[in-house]
Amino acid sequence: MKKINLILTAAAACLLMTGCSDAKAKLKDSSSAVATVGKTTITKGDIYSEMFAKAGGDEAISDATKAICDKEVEVTDEMKEEAKSNVSYYTSMYGTQFTSYLEANNMTEDDYADEILVPSLQADELPKKYVEQNWDSLIKKYSPIQATVLTFTSEDDANAALSALKDGSKKPADAAKDNNSDSSGEPEIITINTTSYDSTLLSVIRSASPDDGWAMVPSSTEGTYYVAKVNSNTPEDYKDDVITTLSGYSAVQSDATTYFFRKYNFHVYDIDLYNTLKTDHADALVQAIKETPAPEETASPAASASASAAAN
Image 1: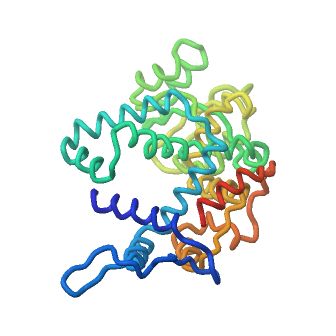
Image 2 (image 1 turned 45 degrees about the vertical axis):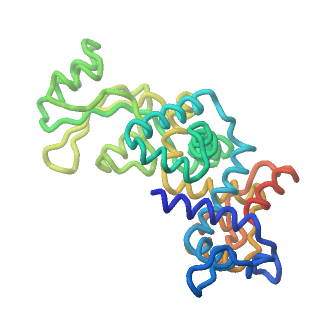
């Protein structure tokens, strides 16, 4: 852990020292010696090459993401508290190992919370921002519906739960528990990406409305029965839940990366970094992507400069 983070720190420093020339970043004083072991001399160029190979791409993406997050995601008191809580956990869990890591990187606990954990929490919010900024197109694409689904292994249990729900004598959670189902009874978001239920049930949900009430739907798989109800098919009614659900999809997260890196004009000039990102972070290398979600807003020159500086 300590070695990996030292490498990341050194790689970041080297990247910041580079200048662009003939599409290849170089250190002006790459031949300067930093250490000698016997007859072997280690230069700044040697360190840069090794650090770049190990972490150059990750550091470029991390720096660019931080520049983007500073424009898109507000640092909240909740983030600060969560970061401090995590630092306390690391301290109690890893003890001197964590303390030694901080000392090796010349960081305090507050530095680690502010410079490492808070930016990570900001980055976690970017997919949600992407969903918010592209709400209409994503709703059209994923067709989110709020529904409650109870799953049973017995038709008799399913029918008993259905009867109790229809006459209002039981709430969904109780109807499930009292009839041998471990379903929570809580509403959930069903989209075209939902695969946790049988296609028969999903077809019924997509064609139903809240006015249809509860229905029992036998699965095409023997021994599974559903009792389900569409709570709402108006996404604005459950917007927060939709944002949380969609932002958890890997495809949405990848599209969010492409969207924001294009919005802030992320551009790579160094050919080595370009090739590294093409392999490891293709969704961020927007200059190589012909078709991407079109941003609804144009980034300010200052924001673009921040992202470009982080990449170069």
